[in-house]
Structures are given as C-alpha cells and as structure tokens.
Image (cartoon, rainbow, N blue to C red; front, side, top):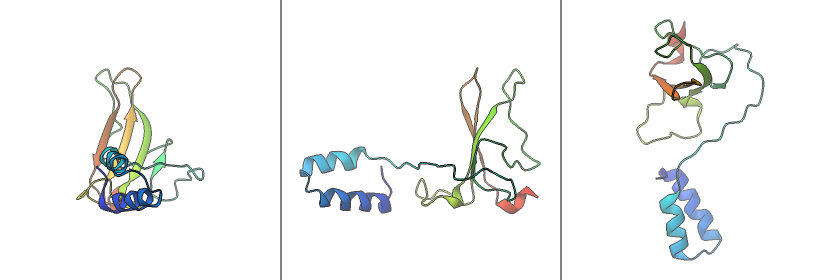
Length: 122
C-alpha cells in the first residue's frame, strides 16, 4: 500500500484524467511504493556511507564481507543510505539505516541491514 505522500499524488493524477471510480479504486488498491535508482557518476569513494550501486560497500569493522556456507564470498550489489531517499520506504522505518544487497550465483540473494550512522564507519 502506498504511503500518504505518494497516495495523495497518485490520487491527484487519477482525478486529472477523469477515470471511472472503480478503475481509480483498483489502481489505488494495487499501487505499491517503488524507488528507481540511476547511476549519475562514477563512484570515487571520497565520502563514506553514501548510496552506491556495485563497486565496494562501506563496511564498519564489526561487519565482515558475507559468504555462503561453502566460504564463497557474495557479490556486492548495492548499498542504500536510507537518509538519502526522497521518502521513507515504510512508515516508521529508521532514517539512519544502510541496506546492503549481496548476491550469490549458487544461493538465494541476501540483504543485510546496518542500523549505524555514517560516523560509525571510522
């Protein structure tokens, strides 16, 4: 279900197009939050804790690079600094969270959450 700011914007857009009420209700019922990421420049790693796709994550000393049960290291996919997002993905979701996504060719994809502020990377 959409969070209020997005739901309000979608409702406004649907009203502009004079759609049938049943059709508008169906769209609002099925709509889900989504965020699309675009890589705008090559990462230079000058800043610690920023969002990035591919490359290398900023791992605090307390977090090791994850591996599967066979000792094979996962491939880093993305690091998302939630405080950089234009809106919170879920109501009550902490603002100072890093979502790190890893992948393995032989095992299911795994994500790790780190509830640390950028200052904890030093």
